[in-house]
Length: 270
Image 1 (cartoon, rainbow, N blue to C red):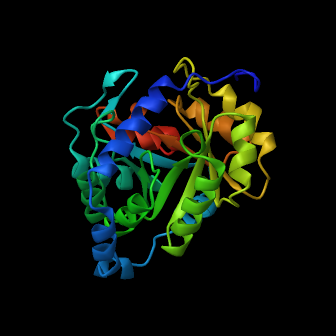
Image 2 (image 1 turned 120 degrees about the vertical axis):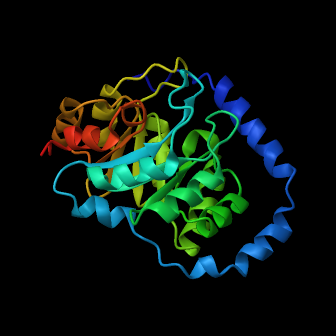
């Protein structure tokens, strides 16, 4: 785990956020939000990711739809989204995370809609959410929960976005990388906190980050680990460290049989 007094080199993060701001600037957000307010999809009941995690008898697995990584390139460029979502449900996932960023992760909001139609599981939208518009979009396009990244937001912005997410009925996972970000995340009164094991300075991944940061998060709060989880041994360590869930993408999308890989991760091979 990195020392809390080391500055984070956020060059890539800043590049992603700048691009996201440009994308949003090109949209008529006021008119689109007005349309979202009238959309019948707002009446769809939320399928609680939090409840699915609480009900799990082991570390719950949130399986991710992920085609590409800025650090590793293509992982599954031709990923069959609908079929993969069905395999995730068959394999025992507690929920499905959908990466919707197009430029850096080769995802889309259409992937979100496809997964929503293909599964009864809770769906988490994973993107660089910096604007209220994206929350309205998430709700209408089928998300049950959204990821809010502390490193991408000011403390005030985090609180405002989290508040709107609650108003819309969306659950949130607030993502942290270090001690300072945990302190910021807790000011938003989160339902769930995700510890990302990827160091933003180097893009190196170390699951020990979760072990070091977990004791700083209140025990009654749902806590999940993200990045670098590849096998059953990792899941067993997360359970020992008091984690409730794991978000896993690369190990699943690069597997020939994601459902079988999920059963391996959960220890339910039969």
